[in-house]
Length: 239
Image (cartoon, rainbow, N blue to C red; front, side, top):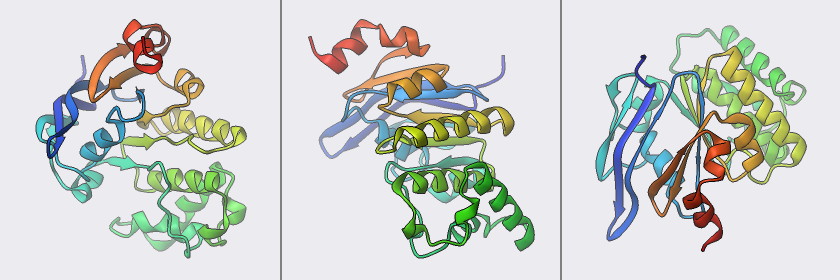
């Protein structure tokens, strides 16, 4: 059996006396869409921030493509092939959409023409090509999420971390984003690790789900099975 693309082993994170992650372990198989869910304060975004090098782990290990990446900086991790989006999209507001798309290609060996062609292809896939020369400040919040997602694909990461991609997005754009994730997974062979409170989207997209509560893993499995797990119901609804 092939080694998982990403392996998280007994990951722990403390901020002073506050234990935010407590022995989190799971694996993401290559080519899958894997969900991470849990109530607010479960440690989901902290987990992402450690995987992509924003925070350091207190203890535990992270392996990517069989290589130890624990506590490497975010530039190294991006170069190894891990991309990331954020709950609040981080775009360059005064730059046009196509200029935003070109930013990740600066360290790559692409010509300007090749980079612009790739950028326009991805913008067209998201239905944003007609806005390519418009400042990012002028597009909606949902369109900014689309832009950030497509920009992440510009440097062709093998694994993409999606942090609440559907939060605050209207239903039509949720559907569009979901379809783009599925298309990137099937057409471009991208693997995804997804945080979301939008359970219908999790059920549609994810083949496997890890559930956190108060920084601890409490369940893992197919989404339909996990949703019925007593510990998951208690974590979301209480006794």
